[in-house]
Image 1 (cartoon, rainbow, N blue to C red):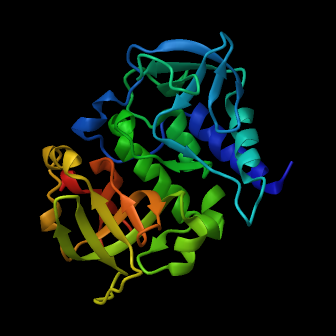
Image 2: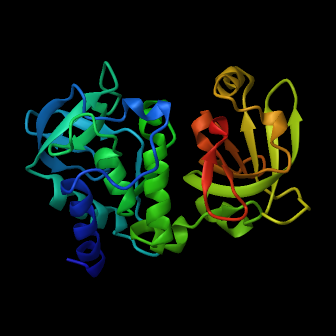
Length: 289
């Protein structure tokens, strides 16, 4: 047993057993992030990607949780995370709400999940929020997780500030908009990046947010840009995200890093985009301003 697992287990257990994490006041979108009307199930074990195997054989994926991977710095970091999570949830009764009508191609059912002793109706990030707060994974921006979004973002910030779990690993550091070495190392992986929008460019194929490092007014061909396809624009605008108004704003972006045509992140949901308060580390969802 590594010292890191020993450190993570008490944090994770406390979050799961003592009830919800200390999180911001819930927004209307968070009303679905509760234990109301959930099914009680028993966890038999935890799979390598932090999926939950139930005693009845079902395999669950926790919405909003991007599990930690092995890294060049710590090759067994994913196994450490699995052991820590399993030590806190295996054999326990939890409550789940299915968010998918059918299993995905890996046989997983997407769910929100809460410890059995979470007060019914209490706002919480649940098991995924507890794992994120312990540094066992990051917030995954996806429509299924929207109800718990503010809890997951706050849990991630809590873990990052305390350099818990994956946040102690340089591989998982936030990417700056001009981090060429970071682009090369993490191409093809999910990343979190920050930068200031210096221009917004739109053509028939996509809208591009051209980014520069925070506090840097220049940009070059190797700086990061974010792209949104035309078919996604209605979703962004319906959530109050108007890309043309973001020039000069500092953003935090989440998504797959593609370096084939210059470093870019394609934004698949408005939840993958936050405005960063340059006077602090606080992140605000664009549509909530």
